[in-house]
Structures are given as structure tokens and as C-alpha cells.
Length: 354
Figure 1 (cartoon, helix red, strand yellow):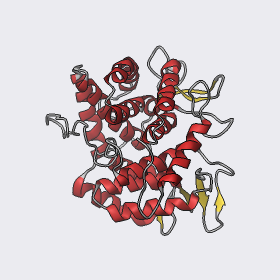
Figure 2 (cartoon, helix red, strand yellow):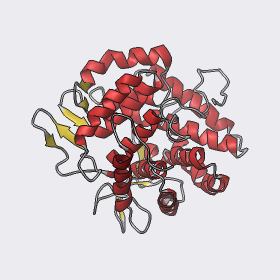
Figure 3 (tube, helix red, strand yellow):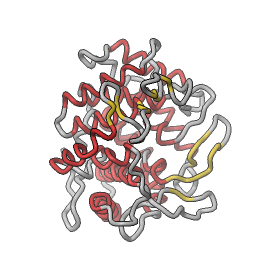
Figure 4 (cartoon, helix red, strand yellow):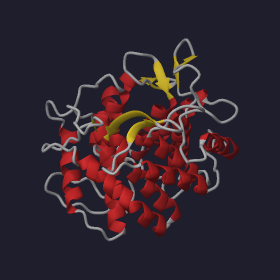
């Protein structure tokens, strides 16, 4: 897909410059660091790869996936942070590991390349072997393992919500390839149920964080009128009018990526004008060369982290632009959740949405 307009907000040339800025960060190995000389994490690496593909840079996107496969551990996981020549942070995080499925399914939706899907299937299968081994009998997924294999003691609502979406992508891949995974379907059912009901002790308390507010909606676990009520309950807590989404409720720190993610969630509920407004606000963090500041503290208008213009922020802009414009066949992946298995309530059958 070549570049495209988001009418009234972002011109095609501006969007192309943002895609170019992401591509300029990619190392010869295929790794996409957050910024020059910085680290990469597999989740944001996949986010950047998806943005490259939306922007028409298929070869660069596929190099990113080749790097990811090369870095995968025998147990199916990835470490949390990588530098160009070594592991920087050796924690093994479930959410980071699961996100490969989202990227692979996104690639299929845009390209229809079955060969790529088949090539990536072993990595997706291994990743979910690791991830679902961290699922508790109740359904939540423990955040991570220590390098020695010892699991952490808690789950995170945001992480489990993102995993739920990635698991739906993994099931869609399996369905397309004729690989039946009833065990994954059962895991999806119990994971979605615990996210919806949030029994005491299921998730570490993170009520200050915006992601814990909107991710159950962004992932499609909470939908329809329930989702509208869910977002309405704390919209005033997390939105700084005229600027965007505050990362935490008690600090005036707005991030462009979280503003874009909320915009996509709003779009999925039919709130098109709210989504466009949020995306418009995010453009305040744009610089002339197409990059975006990661975040800004108001009213001081100070960029935080200081000096940081991250690849993942630019990627969120590109993916949000696609969601609003409907430019690619993957534009509904994060909003309408098209082509994904439905999130069934306990005891219901899972069917593929089209």
C-alpha cells in the first residue's frame, strides 16, 4: 500500500515522511530500535513492522520479521529488550512474545501472501506455547518469566488484553492454514472472561494507567454498549482536552501513541468524530521531518522522555491513520476486529468474524 491521506488531518506526503522516519531507524539486521542507538522490544518492533507495511515498505517489514524469528528462543519467547549486538533486558514477557501473531495476521490481510503465513507459523505456534503456559486456571496470563524460567507472581490487565487480541490473530492464522487449535480456543474463552469480570486478585492494581482503562475495549473483549459505558466512566479522568490521553491519571503527561490507541478504540465503537479529534490532537507532537515526540507534559509543553522521538510512536500514528482512512485491508484489525474469531462468553462457540 502506498501512502494515503487522512483528509483534513494528515496529507499523504506527511504520512510517507513518517513511514520513512521509521524505515531510517531499521538496522541491517532488520531490528527497529526505538531511536538511534536505542533498544528494541519485540512488541514495538512488530508495531513498527506493521506501519512499514501500511506505508508500502514490504521488504523492510519482512526483514523486521526475519530478525524476530532469528531472535526467538527455543522455548518460543523473546527477551524484553535488545540492543544491536546483545540482549539488554533478559526478562521473558508474555505480551511481548504474543504480539508476533498480530503482525503476521496483519501482513496476511494486506498481502494475501500464504507463503509468508506458512513460514511464520512455527514461530507463532512456539510463541503461544510459551505464552499459554503462563495462563492460570482462572484465565489470566502471568506477565512474565525470569530468565531462569520462574514465573512472576502477577498478571496485568493491559498485557492480558493485548494477548487476547494476539491470540485471536493466532487462531485466525491457524484457521487459514487448516490447523485446528481447540486448546487455544478454550484459553481465549477463559482469558476473555477474566478480563470482563476482573475477579479480585486477577490483575495487579494499575487504575492510574490509561492503558488499563481502554485496552479491554481496544482488544475487543468489552464491546458494544458495555464498551461505551466503560470508556465513558473514566474519559474525563484520562483525556486532557485539546491535547490527548494522559499516560497516568494524576500527571499531565500526554503520549501520542496512547492517544492514537484510544482513537482506534473509539473508532471501533462508531465514535468517528471523537477518533478524528484525538488523532488531530496527536499531530501537535509532530516535527517537520515526520517523526513524533513520544510524550509532552502540559502546561509546560516539555517533551518527556526528554529528546525522545520513538519508532513506536510514529508507528501508532500510521496504524491510526489507516484505521481512520480505511486505506488497507487490515485497517479494521484493531477497531472492528474484522477477520478475527469472536470473543465468546463462557460456553459459547467461537466463530470467525468477516
